[in-house]
Every structure is written in C-alpha cells, then in structure tokens.
Image (cartoon, rainbow, N blue to C red; front, side, top):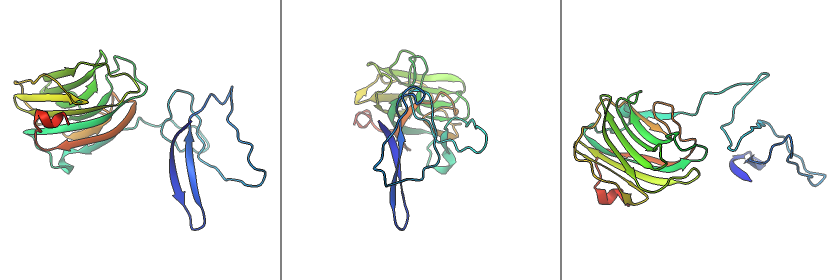
Length: 219
C-alpha cells in the first residue's frame, strides 16, 4: 500500500513521489509493466526490511546509519509558564510492545528528574507522569487498553496540587498534592530525553501556558 507521499513541481511537470510499503523484495519484488512509451527518472531509492517505513537516509558510496528521529523545542522559545500549564497530544505507537513506555510528548530538563510526560504505561494504558527533583509528583492512568496501532488524544493539566489528565474524553482522578517541575528546558515531540520514542505517529502536540479546567481537558 501507499504509506505516504510528497509533491514536487517544476515549470513543465507535476510529479508525485510515493513511499511504498510492500512485501519483502527478496521474495516478492514489486513491479509495474508500464505502457511501453512513458518513462521516469527515479532517485533516492531506499529499501527497508521491517513492518514500518523509516525516514529517508541520504547515502553516497557507502551505507549510513542515521540517529533516531528527535524533535524538540526549547522552553525559552515558547511562552512557557513555570507555575502551570496544559500539554495536549494526539497520536500513538505503531511498533511498540507493551512495556516499551512509548512517549507521545513531554517537557523535560534533559533527564527524567524533572518532567511532565504523556505516555503509554507498562500495562498498556494512557498515563501522565510528573516528576520534580527526581521524585514523582503525580502518576495518573486512564482505564482502557491503548493498543499498538491505535491513536489517542491526551490532555494533561498541571498546577501545584492540581494535576489531571484526560484520554479520549475520559477523565482521570485528580491529584491534589505535589509540585510542578520548574527546571524543564525542552518540549519533546514523540520522546522524552530524546529516547523512549513513540515509534509511531504524532498527529498533534500543543502546549498552553495555563491550566485548563478538567471539563476543558475532556473536549
């Protein structure tokens, strides 16, 4: 099937470039007979063995191993509020086993000592974890299996003594103790500390510099 595509234009031609996920080319090569007249000049071919399509890896005469995809933005580049806020994410893992703890999005300090993390926990359910100074301040899970290949919308609100999370409109149990980590330096997309990746798709990740109400988290 077609996993994705990008579009390129020139002054005379519009071309569609497709990423194709098919069977193992060693045993069932993909082919197209064509019409006997038309042609195409193709480059950037990349074949991968596995259940998922990875990012394009530019190479030359030798093979190249790329680093993991890591997307982040520093909190100094956004209107970050150290006292309260809301983290909203939508997406899900496509190739993660239960126990992998895939992360949808997080605020961290380059470690897990200070973090606000949206993830799937070790039992396969949605979870908010808040840590400050290396101590977990809040850990809230939402009942309901979050299977690999399934997308979820998570919204977490945080303020000192006021933490909660909603998953697909289902609200967790309010935590009325604990502090907000003030030392976070990065907003991570699909990972925490650049590791524990989502291994899937992140449709949306948004930060709001105020604590939404629980009713707003459920929307």
